[in-house]
Length: 406
Image 1: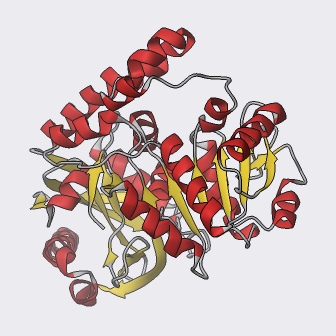
Image 2: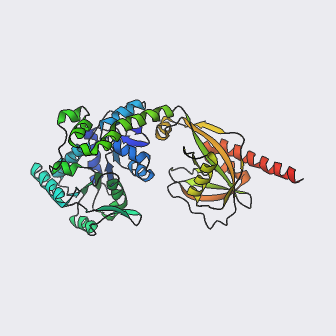
């Protein structure tokens, strides 16, 4: 499936008919699937929310809901051919569900009345559509490390309905995170889709822009007139989003500052992690970008602690040279917003006993202490040059230390 990458978010570039064909396949599959509908505001949120970014990028479909995404794609040197709004695609799925007799559940809205009115509207428009349940979900809050609704019987309610499709309209990021964390608890559902404020539109609580404005990509203008209380959100979704895309494009001509942690234990073994976000056996040293408010030294310590859980770390040296490389493909450049990376290699001494090692499972799924002469062979192909450089630098530090002692 063709896609474009906008500020690190993969957007499906697919026609409505192709998307509906995929939904049909999903409904006939034994697996569960979820569809998200990112717009400029959501993409901006995901840029600063790693969990939201992961959820959007793992969706089966990420439909472009917002004309600004087409503009941003152009700015970033890509072309987004299609645009499918969440509200329109929800109705397209409802029409398909009517013909296929697939049961539907509506979740969201400002209160129970909204969900009920939206259900009545859809039943009126699609006479044979089987809506087997609806609920607002109550208050959606982050409790006990996950998003939960105040409706404690909600999951049971959905399961009893035996719905195959669920539309979730809690607003971003609640709806995306609720689906990601709860989809496996509602096994009858084959397709879950985020719909934002679509239930409010269907219930008549909010008015959508007229077709001509939607066609011209001027929904933001309509919202500015009718929802003046949301001016900050409208500003973010228009001016801030476009300016951020321009800065992202300019940044793609630069190298990202990166700090790598060459961690050594008391046995002179080197710490390597196995990355979690690739199918390959991708072994590397802990590393990450240098934030604007920190030094490379601080970044090396922070990345090492975040990825490994280690606390008893001390910087014992810095390689005198940088290792710079370009990202291997345009996808990597679009996804990261840089031409490549310029790495500072820091040498860190670990004085612990491994009891504090706790991997960040978003970054790494395994670790290993490796004999120094085996490091270059074990690391991933693209990491070998930097690994060789790091090993030689550490051996030089050891030789200098030995000469001083003599």
